View (spheres, rainbow, N blue to C red):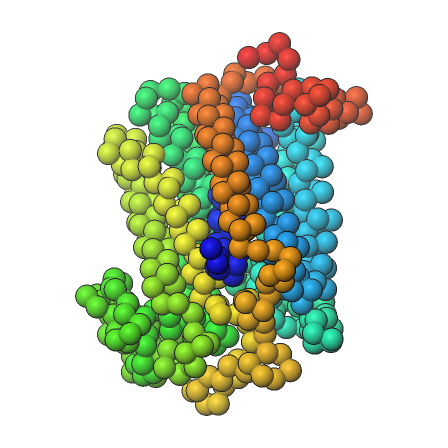
Length: 493
């Protein structure tokens, strides 16, 4: 049987990345929420915020462990399945990922032991500092990963030497045309996932009449954090779409179902048909996309007909994933703002139907984050590194044969003599089985922590000592202490 190595390699990378990306956004969002909770404890002295931070840090530890484990597998594929691509971008990715390891991962993992195991070993101030460092580490990690990924979409600060992309200006590479807008969008998406995760569990406690003071305060803090993030991500999305219209116009035309150059409608729903160059059963605002991009309802926007067919991304997956992301974002914004309004009116916690919505709404930001990345990555196909886009008036020109022609996805594959279709398929099945077991274990441990609920408040020691720090660090070693997910000190429930 002749298996398609390109399809299977893309499928494997997509599956492993999507599984991995279940965890980093929650770590980022939950980390910042823990900073707010513990900071409130230091400012007010209210022990409930101490219990909140301690409880959510346990969830953070479980999530962090799965994120690290799944991320390692993902990176190995650069050397196995995508060796030609790795050679092409090695200088660029090497510097960005080295910075991620030095400035982010070491910072995050270095203070994680103090965050998780240092509650009764270090002072309040030292523990808060550790919480801040862990949160910053998770954010810095996102910074460098997004920088590397954004370079693939809008490469800058490099030149081609012997078939390889070599950095000529590190900071131009870092601040490439799309990196900061994409970073803002990614971080806000992570904040939303963390916020709705907290509101989901808190709403469950409220509906069950358990830990009410803890649950209501957790819910409100996460609600306002999530509502602000939802509003900001709408603004960020508009800014990013305007950037995509300039740097990747074929992607924008595909995401919006805009087939023919001219005034562009803004589709809310529809079924795109690439063969007939139309959107069936479309519900659209006439000229809406033109207005959002330029302020002119009749302004001409390049359609898919402005590009060669071999340079266009697939329509259906790009269109549906993009619209699903936007739909989830609109629903989450409406839900959070409605809850804020009901809180202002003093009736929020009386609306059991709304609390049930929040219990299940935890799935919406996960779907939005996943489909957002699908739209972004599928939308730049058939290129793994996008070529330069030049503009002749209102006509975009994709420069695929110049000094910076980009890299087509099929060219980035490893040699078929090294990695065959049977090997890739076998590894997909193997990793699928292992990941399924890991995810079941993750859900089991997560459920046990939720069912247990928060512990009673225990006052930290007044000062930090070297022995206390060493004891906390020793707990990271399961052979010499407790497993990472068991954060209660020995002899304490």
